[in-house]
Amino acid sequence: MTTAREPAPYMNPYLAGLGLGLVLLTAFVVMGRGLGASGAFSTIVAVGVDAVTPTHAAGNEFYRGYLENGFGSPFKSFLMFEVIGVLIGGFISGSLAGRVKKTVEKGPRISTKGRMAFAVAGGALMGFGAKLAGGCTSGQGLSGGAVLGLGSWTFMIMVFVGGYAGAYFMRRQWR
Amino acid sequence: MSAPFYRYALFGDEMSLILAVVIGIGFGFFLERAGFGSAKKLVAQFYFTDMAVFKVMFSAIVTAMLGMFYLSWAGLLDLSMVFVAPTYWLPQLVGGLILGFGFIIGGYCPGTSLVAVSTGRLDALAFCGGVLGGIFAYGEVYPSIAGFVTSTSMGRVTLDSWLGVRLSLVVFAVVLVAVLGFWGATTVERKLARREGADAGALT
Image 1 (tube, each protein chain N blue to C red):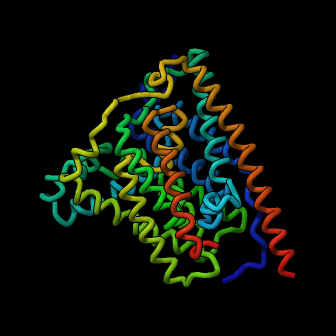
Image 2: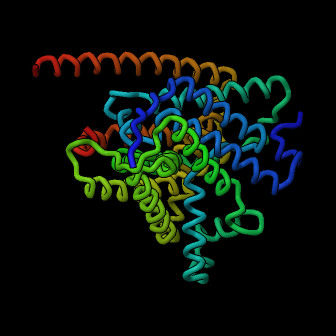
Image 3: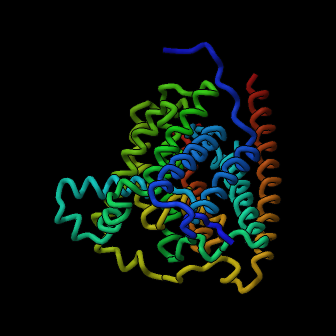
């Protein structure tokens, strides 16, 4: 299924940043907290572990933290509901711009299989790193950055250091 | 003084979940608008060819920071009730570095991968699976690394309190650094575009 329509150009980065910043400000003013993403993934993992082996989950402080979160159920938490919104909002914007397309993002010099393997590996590092840092680019970077948290700024600088340090080795995947 | 509204119990828990969806829609919408549903657009940041990640992220940070600063100055927002992630500087430093590697290898971060999934990117779906696996691995080794994770704890520290200067000074400095960064980023983009244009010209 293909559409003849050309995808619309992306929004000016400063304008998109202003919009994102106003959403972030709204979250702080209304909820007293910023945005996030990795926390929702953690909830899914904790609930999954709990479903398979409840005693193992209960004996682990990390899983227990997520299982005891939420209003009566771990899924009834701010981040789980926010993430549902992210999926809806992304789809709305993508649809309006003609950018919804079943595809794999990669450079011309790598196979689809190779790209998928790197995506899984990178995701795993991302998940581990985010938990070590107590949040990802949304929670620590964007939200922690706006409230000027010392640890958040330390984190954010290191994300850019890591990205630039790895760029040379990953050039065959992207360029 | 009545904001943050939720902390002052202006509405209940059920309402907070509805608002979470609404806030999330705005978040996902602007991430996609910026082009962050595309791994190629995101990683271009690390090849200096398109610095949109830096530009979007820092204009969002500056917008939210200034908004909160002025609302608190006007007496409308209680900053002490706003959540600031506690600082554990060493695990956050190491975690940030690992996350940076994950970003350039995987092509997304957790938030942007969701937007990419919602617009049909199959690599983003694989990435999400990787994130779940990485968190599971973290959960399994957590008991043995808990000592490190909770080390170098400094509590709720903000840049102004750490430096011992007024908040307004840090706010001003962040705006200044952002503006200089925007100028620098655009300069680098232009230089590279010119060089790549010259390379292409040399080939023909």
